[in-house]
Image (cartoon, rainbow, N blue to C red; front, side, top):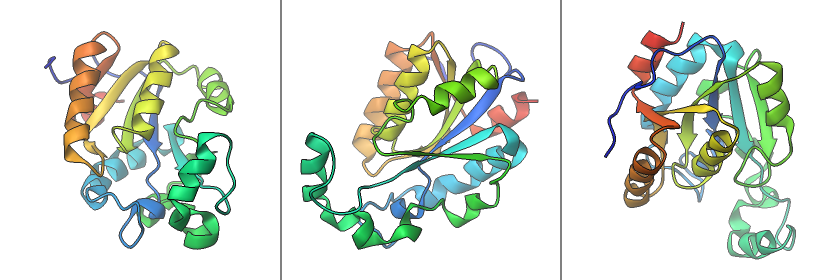
Length: 202
């Protein structure tokens, strides 16, 4: 595996913190609960709290009821009918309570698919803030984080994955994706601890 750490140097003023889908929907008591969610919250809170005005939280929004959704998403919500909005209720899509206090100034971006890039709003934000680096936390490493990372790579952003602030519901695919990120995208993706990010993001 490639070397860990900020191998391309300190983080500049044009960084943003992209926190992926840290919502109640993925917490205890819900069908899609991430076992690691509570464990990764403290480093995510530390990064968001240090730069709330440079933090953007994405939220995954399910369809209202089964039978909705385009193409394969329709089949997806027939399989996962218990996580439609009529089943889980509107509070489920809210950010985790520990993170809501950072908004504002942190921004919330809603999405209806895995990637936050499809609607163009994130592109506008990146251009307006002159972003050159995305520090990425949240979940899942192998689903929505994957879509977020690849979109950032395609846009030429330096991507820093915070290793102790990422979670998945499956250890094996989390590990596989971390290996993929660092071995196949080593010029574009770095992996660093939250402590190192905080120490090098002024």
